[in-house]
Length: 308
Image 1 (cartoon, rainbow, N blue to C red):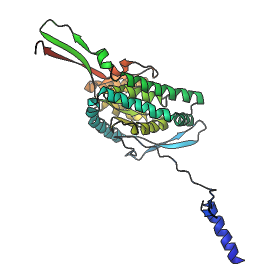
Image 2: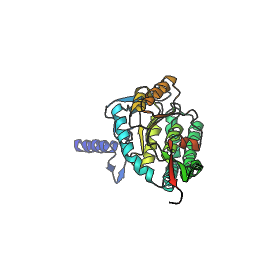
Image 3: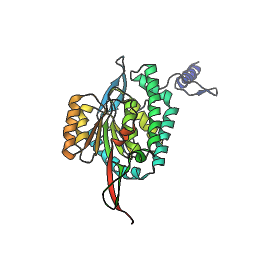
């Protein structure tokens, strides 16, 4: 009887842990594999070098995830990666950039249910979450269509009083730093990224503090959509801590601010003036316009003698 009891207890223990019993597996208890949300820099997913994090809670006050609290060093690493990647990205053909942007939209389309669910996890209502995902996909397709058109539309042959041709055409500014709107989990991210990379720039984006999960999920979409490492870099953390570093870094050529904090915007504009950095304040995150691309372009003019 004692041996039978030992065998019975062993079978019961193995069954509870998911071991095979009589050829079948019974799983009564399982520890789920929780996702670790990291940063996205240079096509990789590193943890913040500072080791800091903040707790993201839902509407019920329940902790949803621990989010990396990006630092100045993380931002500087992202700028180095963006600068290195920008030249190669600029040299890609307009058609190739268009293909990649469209591929991002395709990949996001296949995961739209997951993104809507993640937005709801962070406090969105079901309908609002679905509408934001659909609007984000449509915006990506919109800018994919402009990749091979904006240069034709905004370039010009200028009349001059001499024996020269005078051409003006847009070229990307280079490295763009951006702070997403704090009231949007996905669309604001697309609003900053799509026009920047459609125009041949590389970008570093600080995701909304309230909605960081969709930002890192979107980084996975970018990573699977042929976007070269370093072209898009996504950080999570506090805007109040990082906006001064974004706007004062001397190797950043332009700054996009989608927030609504007047004090932060004033600080950004003041810091940007120190190295003549262009500042674009984005008020309407739903607006689709080729002028969003042109806001991150420099118009270059070249002279060519007639007859040569």
